Amino acid sequence: MTFDLRAALPYLLPKAIAWAEEREAEILRTGIPLNEYDFTIAKRVGIARPERVRVVLVDDQLPLPSDPELQHACVTTGLFGPHMAGITLGHGIYICRPHASIRLLSHECRHVYQYEQAGSIAVFLHAYLHEIADYGYENSPFEIDARVHEIRA
Image 1 (cartoon, rainbow, N blue to C red):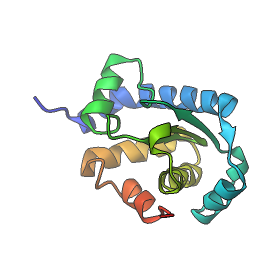
Image 2 (image 1 turned 30 degrees about the horizontal axis):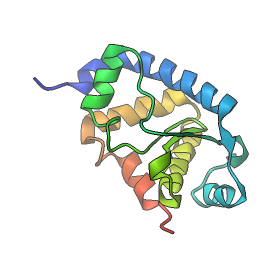
Image 3 (image 1 turned 45 degrees about the vertical axis):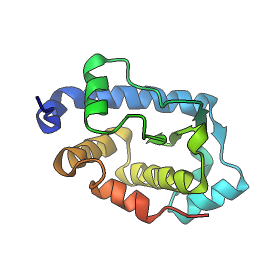
């Protein structure tokens, strides 16, 4: 049985937006600001307000949504899983400590830029999740753009 993300989006999108907004608020409250070098990276990939960015390093795994249907959608579509090293939610970034690198930070910072361009978490996630439904995670234009802007140290 395959999971049809496009069909599920009208139901799942409000849950995804609420989860992302809650996580961003948590990251902004508890995360660390970018250091001087990271600030330069953020500016280089286009972020307008790098002073707002906060990062939380997690030891093993990115936090999954607690809602079972949303969690299933995230894992099935490849948004979450053992290969995922970071996720950006607005100006908040989670990075798995074992995978922390300039390349990953610059990739996630490019997603911050994409959120800024969209104007809100809700607008960005609407576009991003539709791209995932249409192209798959690896081939989505947002992911391709983030990979193009990775800085390799």
